[in-house]
Length: 250
Ligand SMILES: Cc1cc2nc3c(=O)[nH]c(=O)nc-3n(C[C@H](O)[C@H](O)[C@H](O)COP(=O)(O)O)c2cc1C
Image (cartoon, rainbow, N blue to C red):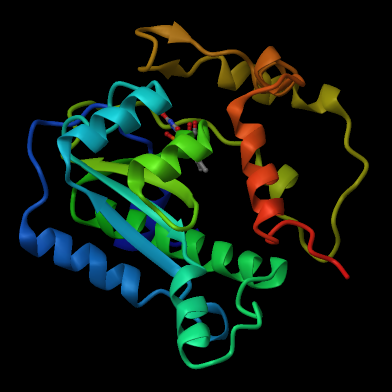
């Protein structure tokens, strides 16, 4: 494969969960906002928004809701929002209150916009010698999070960014034959073939749990965490459904 500074940074990605006690300066912030702004956007709708959380009380609450001590602590906390609000306002205020920018299809497109913007910002963060961790926990208690952030629409991901204060191991990924296909998708999959990868995964030390090796990949996929149980995350599809964003087929 070829190497250049972008590719090398991308394949060296690792999530950072311990940051030095420094915040981003104005120039760094402006750079990240501008990268966010220039991300490709479906149908030019620009349906992603970015919120830099600056209020200490809000940060504390978000940390409690996600139950992860590095959230809202050292560094800077950002929330990536699937933003169907502004364009709906545009249509309403210009006399077209027909909900056409508030459908499942547009919601999907907004989600696509937001995730592309997330990764663009993430790459920029790493290119600046900084680190980040994505935060899916922003939706562990979705309704409480909306209230805390005073948002009209759901966040999809958070991102804690800062100057790394740890050097995690590179986390081993599935061999390419399981995730990248030439010509056609390979369906004849046998879990037994993952034995070698399972062994590799268990050699990884997760710094979240000092010096403890992690479960094999297949154990993680079959573990309790993914078993069926009720959580506040169930509020998310319920609320999206109420808003007409989830399965609004005719
Ligand atoms: C959508 C998404 C949500 C995530 N949410 C969290 C999170 O809430 N907390 C956390 O510590 N890591 C979170 N992660 C980071 C993953 O655990 C991490 O990317 C994965 O274990 C691979 O490790 P690496 O990023 O170091 O390569 C998230 C990653 C993604 C893509």
